[in-house]
Length: 346
Ligand SMILES: *Cc1c(COP(=O)(O)O)cnc(C)c1O
Image 1 (cartoon, rainbow, N blue to C red):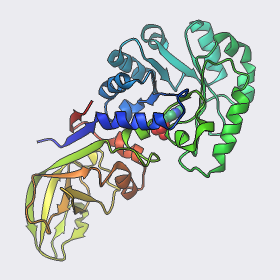
Image 2 (image 1 turned 180 degrees about the horizontal axis):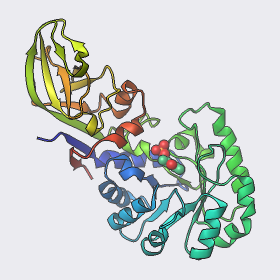
Image 3 (image 1 turned 90 degrees about the vertical axis):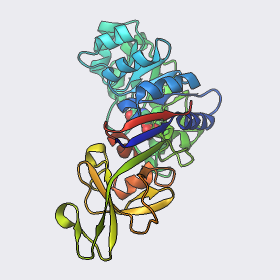
Image 4 (image 1 turned 135 degrees about the horizontal axis):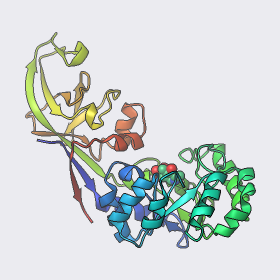
């Protein structure tokens, strides 16, 4: 029996609507579904969002754009953050991918090979990851003007920290750099940028994590439920150890449930001090996480249910992330391929 990952499509759609409602009616809200919709399945999440009204989608690689086009059909726009890379021509020509060009080299190559096809421009406003700085953009200003970009965008480095001075400095840089650009639309904010307020919204926003129920969108509806089946239950005497490294030793007569799923399924071995849930009752995970298995102290349960849940409305991806010293994004995108995936809602 496989562990089951339940993905609530109506929660994703509600989260998109809630984020959309945070910006004015003239601001369009897109959807970022890179990395297979943050691990939740772009081929299902994409069409559900398109049906709910999303017209612009964002991915990180041309291969993702091609797969998404297959799922979405011809109408929605699909932008690729990595721009134009070797081998991407077919994605542009055959699948209508819109590359967000990141460098003068990409602009020149695109102008030569794909003039007349829509493109975006990414500006670097301080994150130093992708995009052109002011001088580099100026060096290809004529090419950019001729391409008439569909989109000019940049990305915020610290939007999850509302008081961080980078937010204001990147906003000022984006306003200055995009001012004279002949783009149809401008975009700066992802989930965090939407929450920073109207000056960060421009014409189009690009939420990702908030759609999938993660912080910094605190009011998100939880999207995933992860249920793990109990393989066996055993009695352990005081002084006996459980799991690799004999890292946990019972101090009382204990009942230990061994549950199917482990670090091969994205349950990070670094996670410490978390529980599996029998309904609403937390049962502490004890011992090390194995590749395929987890051991759980169920001594205090009156009866051991056949299934214990790891992710639910109480233990959200962000709660679990905190126990593993990481972020909800990494928990979601680590969820493995061995789960039986079930979609509800929508
Ligand atoms: C991943 C990404 C987003 C979405 O960010 P979230 O924090 O998940 O909302 C938006 N824009 C760019 C450029 C990204 O790389």
